[in-house]
Image 1 (cartoon, rainbow, N blue to C red):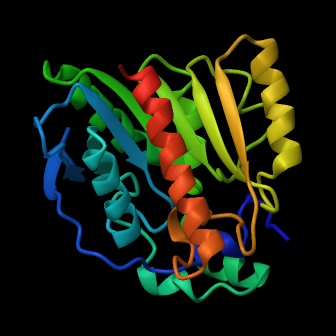
Image 2: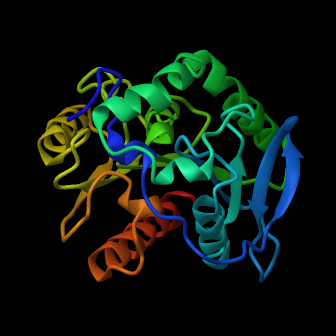
Length: 257
């Protein structure tokens, strides 16, 4: 069951991943950001901007993903798109029902409309484009951030996008403007953006001649949030998360070259 905002209990639940992020904290365009740099050549020629979920840029899971991208040769930027107002990690085990989502997220969402969220994204992208060392830029969005992956795929500010279990998506409204190559990672049983909605989006993109792909993930427990907040002690969830990372990297290797 979802709330009218297009969010569900899985939007604010999940598991904290263990590990020590190895990147650094910088400011890009005046915005705080976690940056993970390729170990081999410090190159910015292929840059991925991560657009996080409601837990924001400080969540360990998101920073570890940025590290994974850097190990694959990308300059990974995880900015604070929530203006210092991310939900705390202890909310991960707080939302058990739709009523909990209303209570925890409802007031928060009212403060995080498109204009408020896009301002830091625009600042970061403008700064990256102004950096002569930066080449092509891709954006990957998760849950809350997935919507903005779609929105920026409708601009020339990025060269490619990936959306993992996006929330608050309206089909066809958010799909029609897309013109950059886009890849979707979707859980078959996602209560927000499921296989049926993904197929409808694919038809729109196909009709519009936009290069795209959708990969449907299945398995025990694989639902909304699987690519960033799944329980890695469960084999099906660990496998789905890892495969979604491989999907993301393959898409950007193709389109940011």
